[in-house]
Image: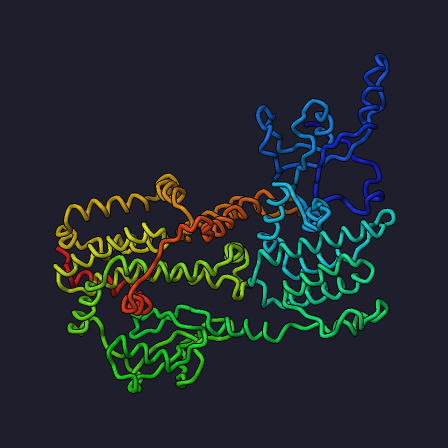
Length: 611
């Protein structure tokens, strides 16, 4: 492209280099007049004007309309070259080209791009809507929530660095920022409700808006909206305060509603989690319990599953690096962060194992008979209902935190981690049930049942559980049971082969992607594959380029995150009515799982010894 002219004294004029290239092509009468004058002069040319240039290497928004015949943009497209082509390239006019930039400059662009109508509504173009959503979904990649709160407060309080800002401009700037905050809170819902930085930010912003409402009465509506957004309230009316009242005194009048705090505390107590209670060193019960569960409740549930008097059992937490903590009956199992106090073991009071489930043949026969008696559709319904409850509580931003900020996530990825854990446990549960069935004919019936359950999960649009069951049947310890698979009827083998096709990883899981795309929402995707896609985007693209944020990468990640939102929606009422018996739900809520691969292979070889 050759060397580019550098603008003289640019730093003195602007105060600092512009980190975000935001280009808008507009009709300008003066530019048109200048171009006509230059064209009429046939003998001499005007001295070229030095124009600042900015590389456009990453991201741009182009309207869907009028894209035919548009020339492909170079990765080093500059502002000067765009201006040179503006007279001939009509497609570029009246469009923003959003390039890599600092978070502050992108935020500044988002605010300036908002337009307010007469009714205080805010309208945006398709590109601006997408950019705002991208920014709000992916900001944890390049800035903390605390930094975003500080930047938003700075934009609300700042005045234009050039010229004097009149009252109308100041009001518009404040209203735009309040709309962006409203969008942020609406997007995050309860996701950031417990964040201390957000609490302080909302109370501080509320104080500022309340003070400004004296000078700008139009902001009184925003005061009410802030109260609804973050459950803030004033203990006194506005009239009791004068504009000259110190802000510190007013700040102390702000508080969170007590009932709001209580409701959030109640939600935390009633939140359901998956609890692993080991009954031997190699196997555990995966139980669906509330977060406030105590040791006595877990002991009773485990005793019922293992048919052992609960008075003989105690709950022990094995902590790192191997210490044992005996939990009292009323001790809480989960901390406030919903993390277990340690690896939980149900033991006899002499601290011995409850039983050996691999030698107690009567218990195994009873377990197999119970599984074979369950209706396959009801089992699929119970599995899907379990997954959907967790999936509907999942926020799309959990994907971003899981990939980029796992070391500081706290509770930000709880629902996602539960779904991933559930997928692994269902897979191991299938393997466990098959290998603990000692009779050949019953083992054949059990595999047939799991094939039908997998088909039903697919019909109910639960691809996460569908994959787990198929992978369980394809596990090496089950796949080697040649005598068992030979007894499977041909129609079930054909059905299983068709289901396996959907899980075929060739061509980047094309079969799954095509099948999933045709399904109507609501639906549950196969989350490990979604995380793999985001990881590939992350590993294959730099987050920063010359200290500027790569927004093309963030746009791709935001598109993947928005898939969660699309899968959760049910605008057309396509949800499948789901009802299952209490017995089936109780069985699915407490799965017996062996998680030791060596133990599983020993069971497999015991069923069908190596020839």
